[in-house]
Figure (cartoon, rainbow, N blue to C red):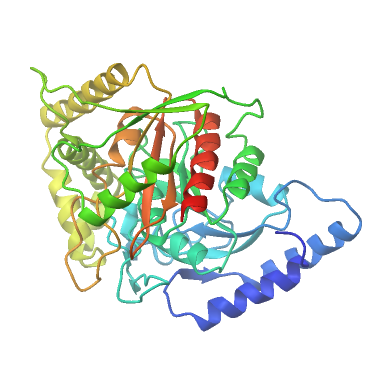
Length: 421
């Protein structure tokens, strides 16, 4: 990454940004980025790098506060709000020498995965008629199009992992509380996470180590994996399932075992991931309504119809219904832990579908498979795997707190997938 001067690399990235029409960026701070790159090159000449990510070109999702930048979170109701202070994660990145290029576009309020911002659709680098998914769609598009080295996103029910899968890049959601959410506009405090999107897993590891989200102790070498090959009430596109099964066949290693996970269908019911996703989404809709109800009552026109409908639905949820949803999620999490207790990680597709056309309806299944790690607070990585046409992501879901193992396993499986491609 660092063979060229940082200023030279930045100018090449800016040229790509200006040449593309992806709607990946909502705000660019090029003057500050150029000055930071100049100072970074001076440090490199003096062999005084601040960290392993000194000179990293970074995009920041629009719900993360950067002092002096817009802090709208994709919301028309906050278009004139500027952040007064840096989010905790931004302060750490600045101190480590990362170069902040600008702010990436996102779905309104981070509540959704259509890959459509208030400025319009976020276009896929492979085909502008396709969506990149969301809600961290701008971050995914910017990374996939080589506008930056890494971009930060937020992941509540899959908003880092889904666009990573649809764009053919890496996405990582840490365990709950591994990364500070101070200075991040919330969807739901119990389910929100920050996470990086990148084209390079070693860079992801370096970034997470600098941010304190990874320990430096190596994980265990022998890893027991389960492969979830039947998906309960989730319909998985045939191209996604074929790519997933083909990838599984390439994962041969003496220190890696993969066993098919059979989800028990007993008195507690089968694997009903759509129901769990809907429960978490409803909890988020209610929490977002609480946060925005005053503005919604005063100026409903500031909220686009899809978001307005979500907030209005959230307003109708009574305490008993919310408790029922919460109980459903907690029971699923407990059952997942019990069913997968013999394994270090579970492998499954990231998104049930590949990138879809902006002109078509957004599939309501996008977060049906990413919801597992959300409900359980587990670390999860999405890695690209070979596919016939559009990018497909394979998801690695670990036990809560085993972020180091998930990153190491992602590196191992990614190498196997690349060799087989």
